[in-house]
Image 1 (spheres, rainbow, N blue to C red):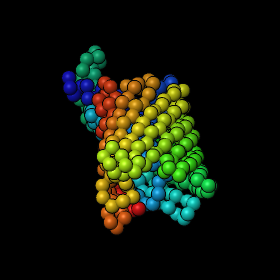
Image 2: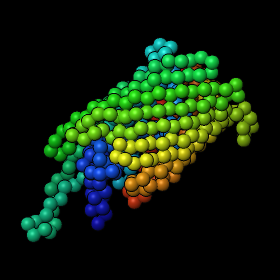
Image 3: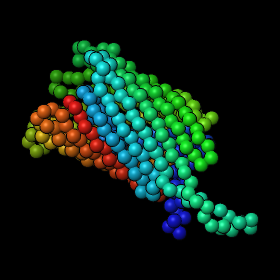
Image 4: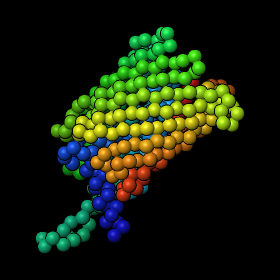
Length: 315
């Protein structure tokens, strides 16, 4: 019975990710599994990228996402500056629904035994460009673009999809150290396996505020934000998130993070998803740093997602 339940749930996740399901629901688009793969920083704060709206320096990181019943995602990311106004990045993506045992039935409709394992995985790459168009008078404004390519290797067919995204972000910093950031994303727009890509329109706002003398008497800070997502399936999702850190990330030594959030995701396994996460960054006297982050996301009857991200920051 346990084995049967595992196979059924794995098949459900596979169907959702491969775009077989129809109608106004998650899973009616190609590349739907991309919505799950984010950093543990973002997952822990309600799905909002509070700490990463304007990356600086170069970084290399790896993220893994494991769902209790077998599906898993792996992502690798490299980002860095290419001059004072241009920032480039590249991601590698991998998704597997886990081992799915194929079963058969007899002509009479009864259980006919097992017929081996089904193979189904997804591979993908993404390329990101951020171009600054304004950096003056306390304002930064940038245009964003991202191109994605994905391949689905299914039991009897191999499908390929490509898509592009476009967006913008603006940030204003105040004399108190507070920074206010707004962002807008449209896409991905594209097609794969005769389905439109799993697109959405995203708008969000967040603020970060360092504190000279925090709860423990030293350098600390907090961030809060909200985000709305209009999915191409006709659904409206939204998030609220917060983070609190102890330490100063730019100084040698440790900085420690606590994160929490909630996401409203209609027509999913758990429509109201509380989220939580922790993290630690250790910066060396030479200036480079290592960071580890973890997030926990419950998804109702399908179990839980566990996110882990390991980053090497070169600045």
